[in-house]
Image 1 (tube, rainbow, N blue to C red):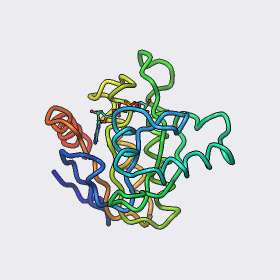
Image 2: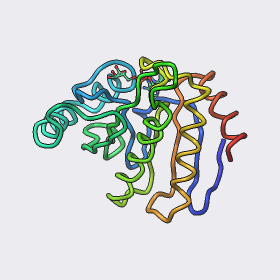
Image 3: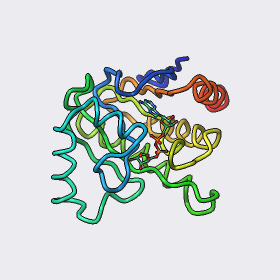
Image 4: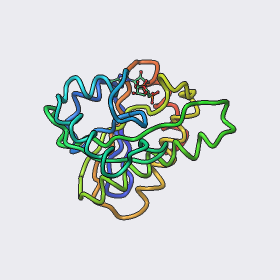
Length: 182
Ligand code: AR6
């Protein structure tokens, strides 16, 4: 499914984020930036050790106590087809009354801002927080689409934003959210 918003194409696809050929792919990381399971594990496995090395440097120089929830940082894409990985930390779902929607929106906004600040043209997102962090995907998909849409109302370098959903079920939820939002 595709939508055009100003000068930017939004695509909703099923796939593996590590196969994406956009300028950047977004990693659903944790605050340690030292890797983990899910998207994070897949990106580090396929991207190789260069990504980990740069993450270590970022921890040492910029975020010694860990990357806070909602913030984003950028590294090389290592051996991935994407030249860059943008690492962001989604909120852990704690019932929805602990600022989760705002923190999740921050992830998308800060990732897009970082990509635009590097003049990148295309970016792929996974469904941040909806795996190990337990954010209900029906809710998360709407936050994701609303935040991306709002961001794209401003002029930026971005010409393509891809949501890469891992399962057919996740794809269906994002497609429904797109019908509703865009
Ligand atoms: N490509 C696209 N989507 C994927 C892939 C992939 N290769 N692998 C999983 N997904 P998660 P979170 C989907 O758990 O909830 C890690 O251990 C998955 O089905 O990766 O933000 C980190 O280190 C789900 O829909 O991220 C953190 O500790 C979505 O991606 C923690 O998990 C997100 O699932 C972050 O949890």
